[in-house]
Image (cartoon, rainbow, N blue to C red):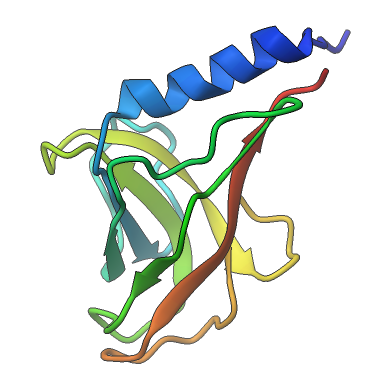
Length: 134
């Protein structure tokens, strides 16, 4: 059985996700496979770290919530192949979400335009969003 939601309900649920994470979180892109749960210890090397703005996602509409503005690290922290990401609350400790990452249009949770990074290179996130069926 699959669920669907009224657009207003889906939008409120998606907007509540951003509120729960809080203003100005950090997006960390790491090498290797992601841990099974958000509460597990972080794994892999931090390849890039992006300080997200206070309002980092657009308001949900039609059951979809998308990144707001440009998410970019002007200089990657380390060499490597991205494997997963973490969204860390502004306290710098609490991991709020983890997901897979990959190339543009790969269907990964977080997408970018390069798979082999070199320390110092610019990293730009091209797609990130959430959706609920309406």
